[in-house]
Length: 81
Image (cartoon, rainbow, N blue to C red; front, top):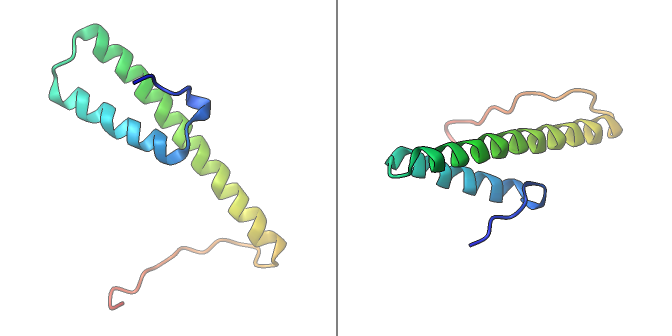
């Protein structure tokens, strides 16, 4: 299966591929060259995921500011729910 270009991956696809890469590396069955190539793609996927999360956080912050809320507050889930 051909790998998608990084810029065409959704956040969920990037995380899924990153999970697969971690599993491949943990199994230890790849050659050194394959491991290095997979590791490099994993780093790029991690960076892409972080960028997408930062973009989403900025968008949420903008929406909150537009609605007059002003600041983000930490979400605390009630353990009794």
